[in-house]
Length: 399
Image (cartoon, rainbow, N blue to C red; front, side):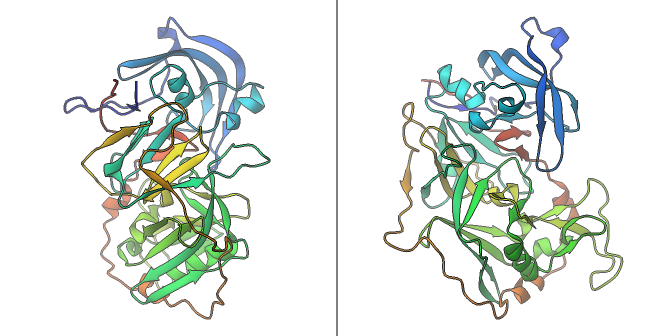
């Protein structure tokens, strides 16, 4: 067995991973810890219920006696699968136990060679994305795939923490290197978080660049006119040193619907009557900071849990090609990836004195023609190293 793609496209059909359980119809359902499942997420949603074991089928493969949580009480509208470090499972606190989650169970069952997977969310307007267990797809990114070391917390690996060296803002009117007394930042590449969270001083500069404002009365979030999604400009996230990998995130990936229905509008001010959207970069004083889906859609990320590394490269949006390479064996290095090399250069970025934001004008001036229809296609949501969505890709492969 070499690698497996959770998503299926065996003819022109697709399979939805619904992750809903009718335990009365299962002859193998077994409650392990009654009322032992209890978890909450960044957006304050939660789920609670029992831990149970049952057979989980993925395409033509299956995992017997696989441990899962049954959300009897939940406001999460979809099922979730944990794919992070086992030591970060909710069961460590609520059930005093650690169980093999999906990638670990796949490796132990011989379905994949190593505990690793790659994530390609695709762009905000796309209806599909892809998670590939046990391999990478070289057609889903551009340039080079670079390995970054995951940083431990308290000498343990629990989150996908890497070092964000710098953040730059670029638009037709100029380029700015944004500052923070916290740089370099410890950031989690967190597919379980919709938005991205930076230190307050840096988030404030980002908002000033793009023309976003923090609304603490009605929405308690940074807001921006939806029309700004069509404006030029991007933010460059640079990792692990000045010569580390660089991921550019454009405005159309950073502006999200604020509500599920008809968008609210500004009641006064320069944007009066315009639709209000949520901006994809928010502020937080909590560490480590989070780079969620608003960042990850612009990156192709490989999570290697056995070597405590991630591979990262700019994504190739809407790629229709595929070239899958499996991890060669248990604990093998990320295929086709090279280590970040910054030589003897300092790991602490310079802190330029901000005398003005030269890129702000270019970010905030532009065509007001923005399709709200495209903004409404917000269909891919991933929860902290868990997945839930309609995903499409290749069949399961074995050799």
